[in-house]
Image (tube, rainbow, N blue to C red; front, side, top):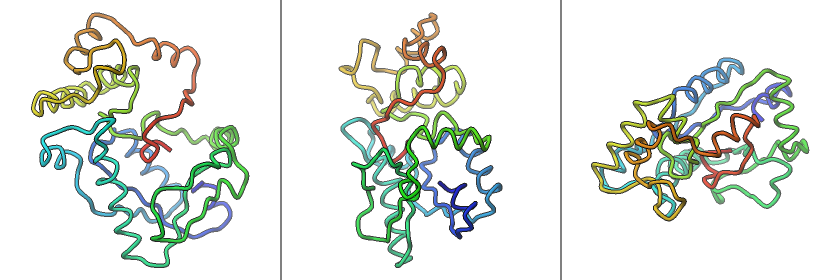
Length: 224
């Protein structure tokens, strides 16, 4: 959306609400986009996710979504209130006609991808044509909505992030995953034992063999 708006000569700033638990690949991607487009990056102040975990002594989960609301939605709304008359451009595609966004009547809204009739296939084609590669993870490293193969990727590619997430479970006495979700262990320390034994989640094998993963994620604020 941002690249094509720039091509059409529109003037805008980019807005990013950080949680403090993004992976390095996302920050590098944002820096590349800002440099490519030559635009301002606005980062509204807000609490870090770790500070909220320490305050509540609990972890975000399927049933406790303070992460999304307090680190992303509330700071965005506060920024829009401080800047009345703003227009928030939302990256909802033409094939997402049942979604309207999350922020209420704090600003004017535009949906450029819908204006251009761009569905998911058109978006991926545009990105490939421009040589723009989006990181496979744009959410927090310990997002409770992530899939098993993503936990496996985190353990394999960012062991320090996995270890710190495991430490948070030990400190709070809670787990990021639900014991009822699947047959894998809920606790990260128990999942790590299986990973170390060579167990690989089935979905990860599909991801590797079939290429681009376009499955829908439950947390739609963090994963566009």
